[in-house]
Amino acid sequence: MDEDLDTLSRDELIAEVRRLRAGIREHRDSTGHDLCWHHPALWGLLPEKSDPQPDVPDWPQFLRGCIRYRQSLDRQLPDAPRTNRPFTPDDTDR
Image 1 (cartoon, rainbow, N blue to C red):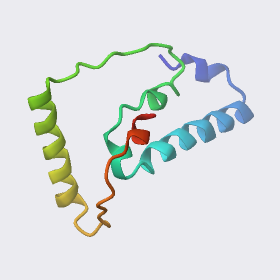
Image 2: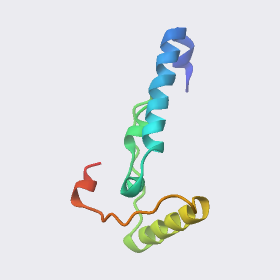
Image 3: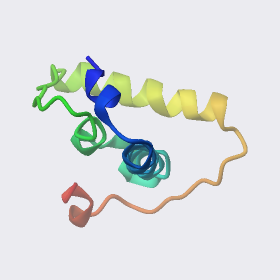
Image 4: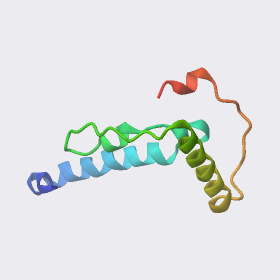
């Protein structure tokens, strides 16, 4: 699957690593409501071009998953800053 790497020069490999690191950092640095969004740009960094469509849970199951995710943040990041910034329609431009 990663045979394309075998043909890249050292400089091309370094450029690829930098590109991938930038994408990972962008995803890592998501915060607030951005944590909830679908991030196709992250897997768009891969050389194989596909458009995987996720299975989207029905609302009750989806909201239970959101609650569990938020609970996991309480457990894993108990000292992280909290915000009460409301969700705004501009947040949907992801």
